[in-house]
Length: 437
Image (cartoon, rainbow, N blue to C red; front, top):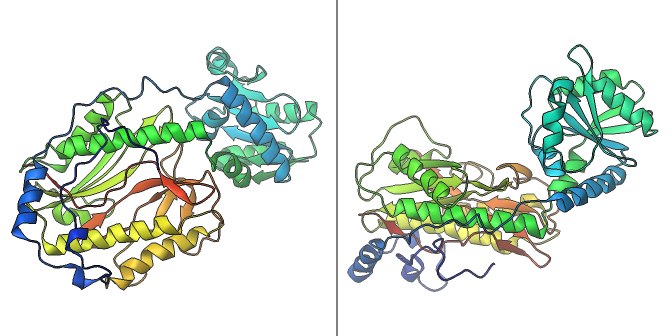
């Protein structure tokens, strides 16, 4: 785990320790609901009055990918193309295009894309009237093939492959490509096997380098600070929308994009992705905040569950602590070579042992999703996934317990697999915290 700057506004103050209430070596389950002392509750109340430090710009001192990075990614793509038995890779407008070239382009009915052959120069395919704008954005490569409104962009791809001596070849297509683009390529390239290329894309984007990890770490630090900054200003009667806006404002105050914020109060937190039911905040409610932003194209995703306004009940403490222990168990199990599905099984077993039901009865979703330039991407920590984990993979660790009509708790942090195990890209919580007045 990265050593934190003591002055960082991402730090979350020590307010309420469920561990202090547990007997040494005590089993998980209903037995967690021991009573707290009056002194501990008073301590929690006092700590909750602590407000977060002022926010500062945390983006201006960190740079995004540059030309050298994109050139290295192109070469990585060439190696992956060969390793997976292909001769070229085609990516259209979208995240993978940005990853390999730095070109941000909105996908419309007019095809814009990049062809990366295993040998020879890369080439872009662009609508003719967009060539000028395309060249403004391109940082790697100079070959731009244009097509007029009454012409086929796929014929341009065919021509490039022919020039590279790859007409009778295997073409990997970015799995993000739309169906009409895939079909257009397949119909035009009759002598070429056009195949879905997720293996190539995952080999490139699925394992982050140090620069990518630095950007993701910064994005998560910003979100962690934004969450606590907003939560510490909670007031009775606030709406979920108001708190969500406060998180987005705090992202912007730190130089990041507004991002997004899913905020759920009280019983609404039992619905993992929310409910249309409105709710205003009351003292004693749990507050679930699932938020993220991006820094130079790299995403964050953190969930915190707080207690508002007064010390939590034994029931709230019990459920929160089971979720925390499930997250910790998953963290300790992660290392290279362990199957992704095994991590989900490890966290789920903690919740099941605590008496909250088996399978998806209370923990209703997978444990985690990959993250990088997209908030949800490969790989996925889901039951039965045989994928061996490898250094550089990044994903969420987000167990939860959701009991409709009763309670909802989730804790989420982003992890990176290392050579020896894994590390967090945000500071994990160890205590259920009381926030607001």
